[in-house]
Length: 324
Image (tube, rainbow, N blue to C red; front, side, top):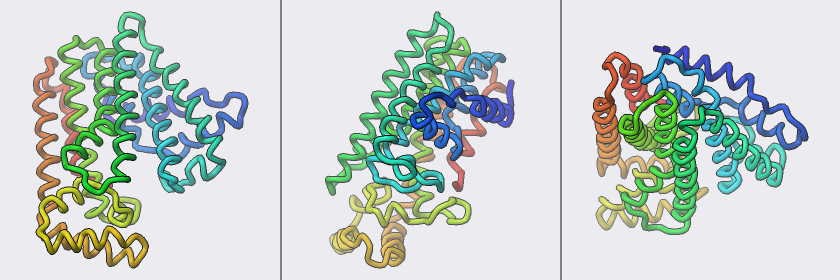
């Protein structure tokens, strides 16, 4: 079994050796730039850990895992264009550093590179891997559309929000684990259990992200707290607050939502006070914990020796309790 540190080192080395210095440089330089800005590399880590659950040889999974990371970064690049975001990982976004046309085309070639790397796995599992990836990629696009739809409407239900984060975030983590399991030689039942584990970890991960944006420590989190509140982003916290608020609180929340640039620090402070009064932080933690427990139940059903599951359990615990 590989340790988490060893898997991360394998991924870092593989990313350093990515063959993205191609011509024309105007197309590939932004791709190289995206990977220089870093990232958690969570998706390739989960792919290799899933493979390692069933096989001691993870080499075959390294290149496909890079394809999944390339695909993830491609979606971020295009998301940044749609969101008109200026920064990603504390660096200028590609469309700001170059221009929108460059960002669109470089994103397009990243999608093609993703397929190039993902389809490098052995022939007997290739059809299943492509099937999982195609479904996952389509759902990620659907999730982004739901997210864009939410910007134009006020009333979003908690179920609608959970559906959106399932598509936009959770299914990609699940797909990575499913593909890693297939490469490692898992049967269809075990691969599906790993998919469910990744799905529920992804849901808990995104809910924790919502919490950190409002309740995190700025120095640890790495960015200003309250950005979602200032931007009127429809997170689980805001949706549940609107759902639970009495008439007076409803009026106060709607008044805050109309104030985009007027004293953002006060807006954050007042909205957090409303959240606290309604118990929104604890409610969100409970739901994240529900998904975490569900994830572990699925992992426990995977038919491999228990000692091989330890690192995945530890990683899931770290993702739920993370502060950045």
